[in-house]
Length: 442
Image (cartoon, rainbow, N blue to C red; front, side):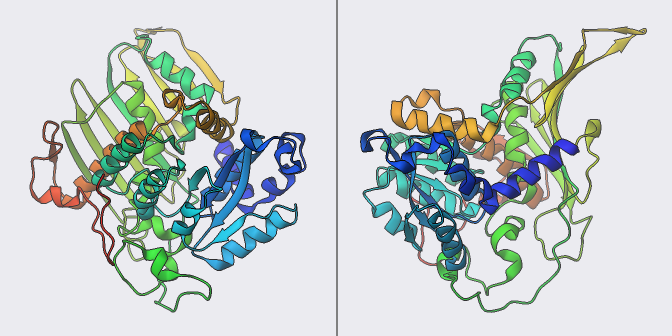
């Protein structure tokens, strides 16, 4: 739990901008003192700068002297003004935009970071690729299975570098854990567990609708989402608990944990999915998505189990998040802090050698953003740690879990036709677009 708290403290510091500002004075940031020629620079624009978008640009600048911040965009003028003031203290003067389309028109921008709410990821990513920009997109890559497919198609059509912010792919200890999982030493893996127990996520109290805060372009914030009166609970961080904009903990944390659950057993798509849960912790609060959920995915030869719960920290194996590969010889457990192997015992004897906990030794986010910049320069997209194709596969699996929950039944996947065998469930394949927006056709 200490590791988890340290991670949250680090993320909060990043989002607050303190690390970003102090980093400008460090020697790796020679770009801001014009020590690199323009030909060596990668000019970055950031779209959505209140949370992870700000953390991403912080890491990108800190770890890449080639990276140069040239544009910021946010529909909330209060956030935009705050970030502009922070960088101005270090004589950094990026262009400021409230409309992402104007940022994409900026010929000075080579690549963009997308840190918006989930329901904007697909449209902005495809528009950016069409505009000739490379993209670092926050997870989950798409807010529906149809969006995931469209984003993969756009990367292929426009041949852009598209990295997705599932930064654990750049952590050495995760890579080592996957190598062990693939070694065969665990024996037959029959069950994979992935979970996120988030005790720090408390109830969201019901609040009345109100006028948008001054300086917020609420119509642009809504974009393709259904037109509704402004409510503070649906804005900024808490947007992820509403189906209009996101998929709850399943897509917020599931894309991280299920990512490695799939990688460890080299899984493709499940044959069937069933899910059960609801608002068991906070039944009367303002959230729509389930605060408690159990999802079972059936694959050939094994099952994958997803669990999430808010308001509780004590998950499986005493960890608030993680993945467990349960084999006949032993169980590998991995989380953001490290990994270990717990042997099975028969007649008092271990079936395999234990592996004591191997701790994390590096900065996954820093390495992940560095990988992005390296590939932007090399154009070797095969070197990306988390290309859009991989991220779309994981997001699709997570969307399947949410669809099973919303459909209220066990559903089967028709891999040949890329849809469910249940007609009613197929209505969830594509997010509904409103306000004149349409799902991009690629």
